[in-house]
Amino acid sequence: MRCEIRSPKGSVLGPLVVAGVSIEEDSLKDLKELGVKDSKLLTHEMRCALYEEIKSLCKVVVFLPIHPPEIDRYVTYGRLHRKLNFLEAIHMSRIIPLLMVEQVFIDAPDTNPARFSSELSDMLDPCPKIVAEHRADRNYVVVSAASIVAKVERDKAVELLRTEHGEFGSGYPSDEDTITYLRAWVEREGAIPPFARRSWKTWDRILTVTLFP
Image 1: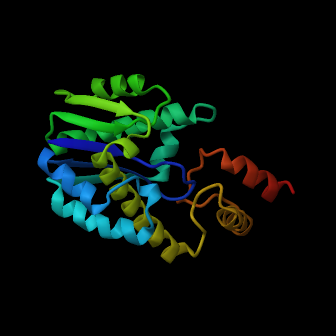
Image 2 (image 1 turned 60 degrees about the vertical axis):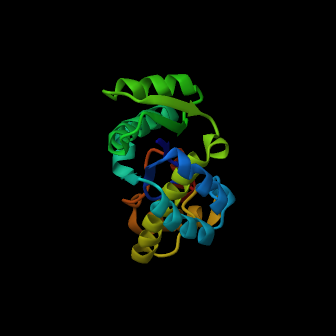
């Protein structure tokens, strides 16, 4: 049985979602035949449809959201990515025992996959064999499946935020609609939204323009 852990993390709004799936070796070909691949290469509609198929094919499908307040507690200015990688490793270590597998495939978030694998191994007892690689979601279909789970669950969380707080674009700092929304929020409320990741350097740009035009 194989499993994978996947966690997209670039947004300034909403949770980071860590997801894992486990599947019998014989079912991997079924995932490929369905067209499962890196979630970034699929439309929203395709991801949602494939998610239902993934749930029916996989032995275990599990995900954990990491909400902005928890992200901010672990991340300090200047060390964001290393701290965030460690936070992801903590949540992966909570998911892996639930999958009950002997080997896991991970799309490594660290620039040094071996270092990340070592950190994660230290958190697990017993520890399965860990295969951590960059762009593993393009090399292993089981990794692609977990990336779809993570993306769909994050999209659901973001859509709920839109229902509660209005349209804010994609939630990513590269989206000018998102930046415009955040600037307007700060001007109106005098504070950063509670569902935003305060530790993101994006706020340097937003607050400088908003508070010191």
